[in-house]
Length: 287
Image (cartoon, rainbow, N blue to C red; front, top):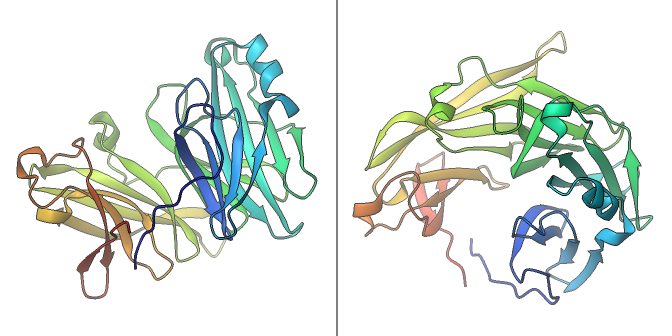
């Protein structure tokens, strides 16, 4: 397995981009800096080198920004099997949302129609835009009860019925993870949505990671199931960020020689994949 660097064939406002998500060969990007994040959105096929820029002026984004100068946009990207269509979801929170209970604005871009449209949807939580996962027709985010609150919910948007749903974090999920600002990520694993989190109790030489999967019981109720726990140490002391299609855990890790800075919040210098069958690591080097 080898990563390759890809040069983006278009110019962005901030000259740096953040990956929103990827699906079926398309990558969704936006500007990385806060003042431009969620404005223009870029759909890019790295194999064909084709792209499409979704300009913010062709949506309600600019009008919303004029009325609510301090805006917190959140993005998600996925594919609607029923309509055979790629979709971008944008949630616009106002700075007044918490105090005045203003409903966030939700809009959906359809690649098939080439247009943005507003969606009337009820949102009860503030979504964290740091990570999301597209799993079986739904876009999942981590969410908090209110802005700047502790992330205690998983919220998702169904691309078919265009309704938001939510479920609380696992009951046995250690609240100290958030009290101590330890990282957590939401990800796809074996066709299901999963949470991977750094747990309290590690040291400068190792970290403990827990993984939970979301599933339905026989009665159709959603419940969390603890899948496994890992202790990452030495050269692979880092943060789990996802899984490969063959089930390996992808970890942002510190360099083997960086013993003096081996902490959760230290600079991450390489990416490795852990095979859960033989517990061996492989560097995912960038060519």
